[in-house]
Length: 265
Image (cartoon, rainbow, N blue to C red; front, side, top):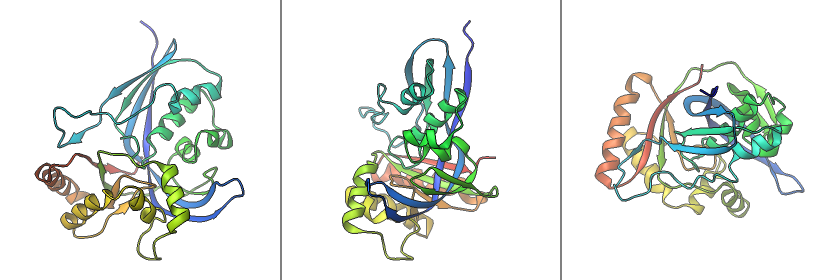
């Protein structure tokens, strides 16, 4: 039986996000606080070649005739690109729990897990695959600056979050383009400078935000460029709030992922 190496790819939560400038090449400079979560994809590496994606995304309110897994590429997947960058080959079985296009760094986490398996730990090299990959490579709790390549570790944090991800993704490039046109929200309106732009790109986000706010009694924050809304909450009430949100999704005829997650140990 072929030997299999298993690796977790934890989601990243962007607790706060500021755009601090823009380089001449068009890349935006950021300052963000990020935390790795215990909500994760899982990868299995074995001898061979190719990528197999297994859907394990826990949709709530899913209609039987609707597709489950959002568009996850195989040929241009970040796992494939990470293997190429590392100069390695493997057959990879990827169990997806983190919805794509959610702003939780699912693809970046998968790439980082692949680099770790391949013995690559250079954040500058990892940044070639995307701005979130260097943080996902190190994990933990950190301030991330530059175009994602500067990762300053912070002390571990204990936190419980409720994640609410609609059944559609939000393209990051389109959100940054909209940000250049509309700018950031007013200071104090959001902890995420991309939130206003994401709502321009995908107005349906507003319905999910408002439903979440109504049930929780306070306004959620958008994770990264979207589409996940999140609230940090008391762990004692998190499961009850998640159940209420799931029931509301069903009654509203919507489809989403509801997940209680914690800062990774």
